[in-house]
Length: 180
Image (cartoon, rainbow, N blue to C red; front, side):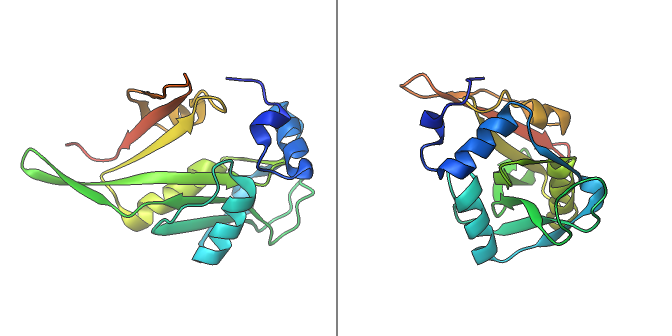
């Protein structure tokens, strides 16, 4: 994983870039997912949050979820604050043998730049799976930002990465929820 510099954070304000660099170096506020709840959020809320805090910005998605603090615990983050958001595609269907498989993509995940939510990605993913019931969920991780370990911890298996002409790569992961 590359070390972060302001050159990698060019689309962000200096304040957000500074917070992301600190968080990358393990200087952040911790929130526990057990002190949060997942709620569906509208398109405008998801777009504003992801445009502000995700390095690729927003893209249209069918399913949008926010993670909101419901109990302060030991954190300094106020109750009611949305600390993370995740978006997922509509199911894409394909035939595998005699079966139709419903596959969704986890398109975006973003959190406040100086907050790490322990268990937050898992809680958002679990809510999505319970509501939508896809056969699998796939996602990509930018190799410059992540080695994809968080996906492995959530049960995803790594597939063939996509390598671009400039040498950068996206790591591809899939979580199979049914046998196919």
